[in-house]
Image (cartoon, rainbow, N blue to C red; front, side, top):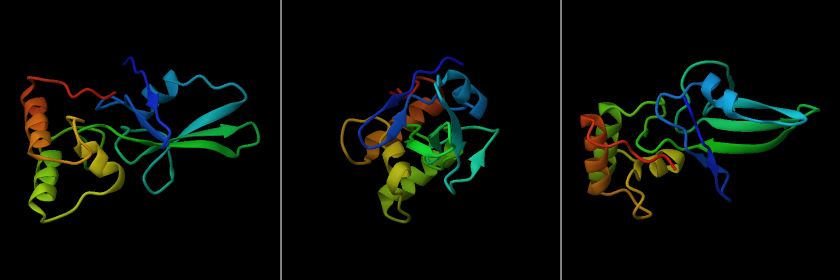
Length: 140
């Protein structure tokens, strides 16, 4: 799986494709004089499985100290499991209806169309199209 990661000034990383694994991401990283770890949302090292919204990519120096930590956003993956599924669509719907709230990285992942700084019904439509296979949400 070819992956191009993008970072911003808020220590957010995008470009992780739905279904990407720890091994996929580690294989794309080029580190000189240190290592990279994937951390889950509880900041525990993740050595296998899928990368999802809320996980973190952490760079360590040669002494083992963290020098950079980036939160992962997979647009459309609002539950953090690394996939875009009906569960994400339902969670996004509940957020818009006000029956439950998304926040942080999960709220940002819900802004699947990236046309505003908020989650709207348009984002639900984008997720539906992704699930129907008529589009692939741009992860950049």
